[in-house]
Amino acid sequence: MRNYTTDWISNCKGSWIKRVITTQLLGVLIACLPFGMALAETRWTPSLWLTGIHDDNIHFSRNRTVDDYIYYIEPGVKFNYDQELTHISADGRVIVRRYQDNDDLDDELYRMSLKGDSNLTERMNLKGSYEFIKDTTLESELEETGLIFTREDRTNHNVMLGPSINLTERTTLGVVARYRDVAYDSDAYVDYKVWQADLPVKWRLETQIDTIYISPGYVDRDSDTNHSTSYNLSLGWDHESTERLNLHFFAGARFTEIERKATRESKENWNAIGGLQLDYDFERGVMALDFQRNLRTTADGNQANVTRMIASLRWHFTERFGTTLKGGYYITKTEGVDIENTTEYFRAGAELFYKMTENHDIFAGYNYSQNYRKDAPVDPRVEKNRILAGIRLNFPIQ
Image (cartoon, rainbow, N blue to C red; front, side, top):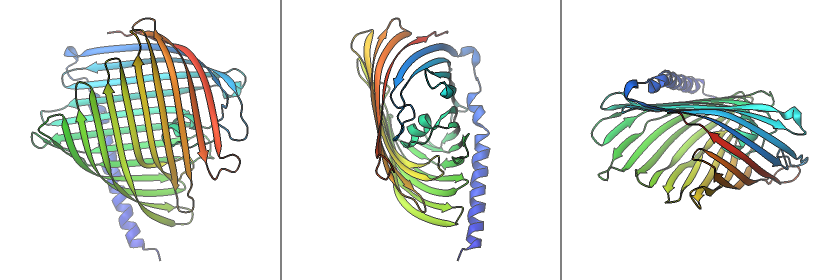
């Protein structure tokens, strides 16, 4: 029998947490106030990128492969503001995409991000960010979950606010609040919202470049079909060297309760969470590694436990000539009340570039991606090959 008293208490608790997060998020613009404008360094970088691509499976389809030539025109602008107490960066880009044969797919994609970091007082710091993406399920959805859905337009708003205060010379208490709103143009997919709050307590070690922390957290995911709440606890270590190596690591556990709204059935589970971000600068290049394991919401409204590893290497053979190598591997397990399946996704690519000037380069590359789903009704494996070439023009203004 359902306990309505427990449900009422749970709903009140969830509403209270949401109100707290909402109140925190309203202050995100404070992180972007231009303190000390006269002493700041400001830099604008307008850009124009032109790319031509041959794609042998534009729909990433298992049963009907269609190839086409796609042309990208990408005007954009970056903004950086650096002052002793405040740092702001912004990046906006419009991607005009045109297909040679399948011109009914012609569209425009939009990406915009804004980040701010300000020391409000000697002890208090405030970080904030906002990101807006308008693209299709074959871009961001695939990048986040490794799952393929029929191409539909999607808009994604991400907001983060992170105030922190130094309790002592080495101890910091913080709050990290996040809100996410994802909406699809098609009714075939399920819009959803995510509220998240973490309370990291950090201790800086005597090395001055190492920090350890403990962080309890709460996540509320809500869609028309499912609702879930998660309680997390993680331990982390940050190693920030100003010379070559930056490393951020955390590991922990989460408890999640998922409810299917149509039937009121629920399911509880425990699982591991973790992350590793590593950046290493060589004399001639830079390497980056990003590992994440956590719960995500998918386009069909279900929850999925996603284990994702992404690696990249940018290497200069000479002062002007170099290569970029990128790869990613995903294992995605859907966690629902009445559905469970596992999907693997792999992608890899290589690019050669030549810097005509410090800010202009030409490039050519190849990308391969593969999705494997054992319970797929047609073919469990689907592949995509892309050959691309183009030019990137940047015009920094300071």
